[in-house]
Length: 170
Image (cartoon, rainbow, N blue to C red; front, side, top):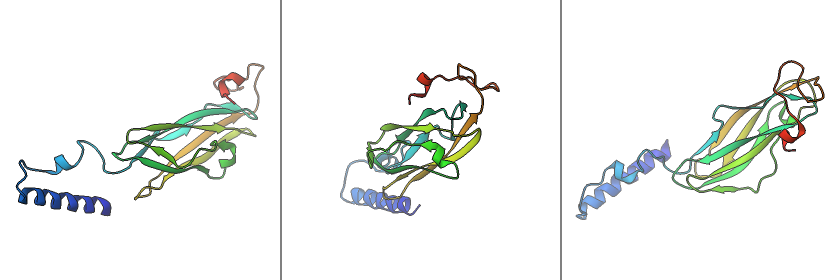
């Protein structure tokens, strides 16, 4: 919030100075801020609420992609993409060349894998941090479900979606 106040104050000062030196036209806040835009680097992650893996047999693997999107009007420097929580060791984010520099409007897909070693539902938290002026940190719940038994087509025994080794990408 203090950054916004500082920018707002600078915008008012600039507007006043421009009018005093006789610049043609009036300069309002709409002229100083991009229409509908946000100031500085901003980040969104898709999926926006939580990362839910399809059901997979224990000992199997499945992955999904999370999209990091730079939605601000300045480049975004992503410093870390990590997993936290009690079951974090059952989920994997491959090493990335950090920091990731995303231009304004750019995006970067990041693979997250689920590698269950037992039956059950498992939870972790995906944490993405930046090193911009206002450190941005986004957290998303990560949920994976593993079943114990499957037939030769790797179909979980209680109605989960089927997977074969080609689906996992690993």
